[in-house]
Image (cartoon, rainbow, N blue to C red; front, top):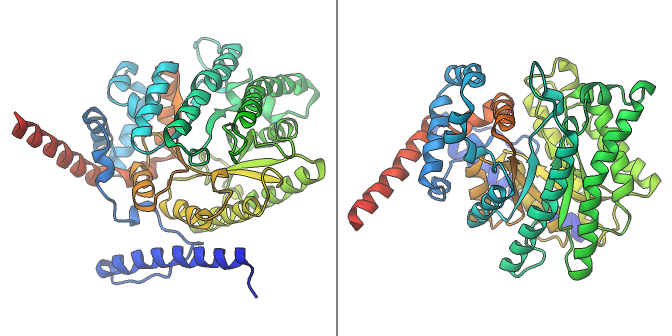
Length: 466
């Protein structure tokens, strides 16, 4: 006899399978080939018939900016040219034409305005990240003030995330329909000589610097936990935390130090029977990722603390020199990612409030079917608010729009980098390099044609009203 949870999960799998197979049958009219599709072998979002509706939600300046991206991503040749030319493009030009689409602003007021703009599109919260990375300082660049990064990041929690989250809750009238606000902490931006510190964190020569990194992150996480404790007393009916600190992943050679950092922060700030305040990142393109999920679960269980995860496929595939650590095929990575989602959600939904070892999940992906898969599983769960779907600001907007308007998803956020334009230029280049395939699937001719169509209709409507 199947349990209620097993029956529900079986139904969710069946629903997703039907959706995916329907898409496959539709596409087979043109390809003459029907491929079996299951949740373990999800196609890219580009295989989905995209609605132009998401373009209607954008302002005309935003559309023109995306038009430039469309031109840069017409094919692999133009994309490669854009990547090579990017470092030589003046910062002021990027700020005028691209900055607002992919970055949240230079200061808190601009980030707040970005949050308000996203809210109008049904995206009720953000994961904000001050994009200054000490590890990338080179040449005659000015030294990075780590103290400044820590101070500004702490203030961003109190002055941006908490007020924005409370505002969204007030507008919605439902404590549990608004996802938390997240602040992303990039380890390489929170300590000098970060590469050596993270690589050699166990070596006596770097132990003091590693403890300094833990202390810097702890200052920020303490602000997060204090806010959660205060707000939980004021709103005891809320299931999810109000704000969460997320530890971003780094390149594989640095990850041992990052994992240790995450464990130290978990143990201190994710106390049993309290909301999750710190979420770590696992890159599911790594062959070791499933073992990591299992071993981290066991450590947390043994040491009586809780964990939360942001699952990503992986951001450094184009720069990872050791290919042996990465899954051999994209299909293997897709399978592994969806198994990670399923495993983590199962651990979350079966718990009572704030009692499980695994307490929170961010499904960070531009893959439509992985996102839909997660949403189908959690649709009727009381713990739904502890699972958040996420995409990068300015990317996968069609995926975000469709999830909100076709499937009623409200637990969805955008990753919003902010900071000085020079630093965000480095971020934009890395996104173009690391997510080139995703950008191209979202862009090129289809994007250009959609933009021309929307702007043309607006121009015609405006002319008719004169």
